[in-house]
Length: 179
Image 1 (cartoon, rainbow, N blue to C red):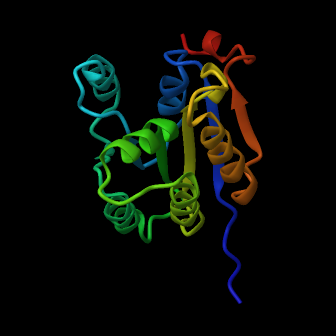
Image 2 (cartoon, helix red, strand yellow):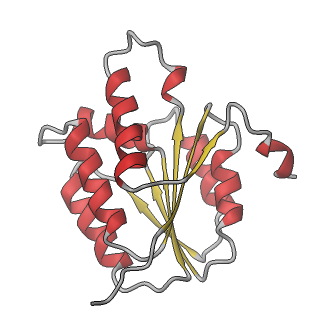
């Protein structure tokens, strides 16, 4: 029986625009093959952020922009990542953003449970390095309609994927290491 190697998974969360994405992009530089899953919509309020992120990444990155079809996106990403070696890494930049985008645009009903299970299956069936980047649900008021969904998404991913590297950017002084 072949033993599947343990994935190298880290979860970075914290305030918007605190340097999480930049830190992770730099952390993944040594990997031969890098995949970036961008979750911001092409809405005019995000264009500047999207452009900044694209300019930082070199052509050694493969970028997937999400669509309103979650299952198709997962399949395309899975196919791309299939049979990648240990020197491959994938960064998902904005879990809550992806979930909210799907809730607003998807033709199928998407629940936090469906969304999380899809991600768990994608990540758990690969042998590459993963970096999950997200905003801290604490930036939303508890009265925000989906606040509990956000917390559940994070908790289930951490629990089911047995993520041990959790970096809370509200408390870490990682920003000082970016220069």
